[in-house]
Length: 127
Image (cartoon, rainbow, N blue to C red):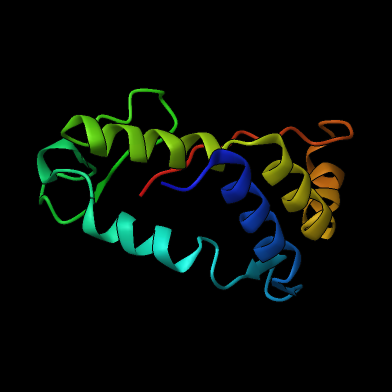
C-alpha cells in the first residue's frame, strides 16, 4: 500500500501543476491526483454501498463521508485504505498547496466576508 508521505507529495505535485481559472470564479482542474496504482486500488475497494449517506429522499444522491474520522468503508482493509485517503486529503501540505494555487479566490472571499486573513479552510472530503 502507498504511504501517507508519498501520497501527500504526489497530491501536492498535482495541485501545483493544476490549471487555475479566474472565470466564472476562481477554481482549478488537476489531473492524476492519486498515483495510478493507488487510484486503481481505490476503485477496486470502493466503500460498501450501505456505508454511503443518502443526501435526498429519492436515493439519487449519496456520498461517502471522509471527514468524520470513521471512514467505515466495510471490511478492515477498506477501512484502512479510506482512512488513509481521509488523512491525506486533510494534510496541512494539501491545504498549503490549495491556498497557494487558489490565492485569488481566497482574497476575493476575504474581501467580501471580512473574515480576516488568512481565510479559514474547513476540509470536508467526501467520495
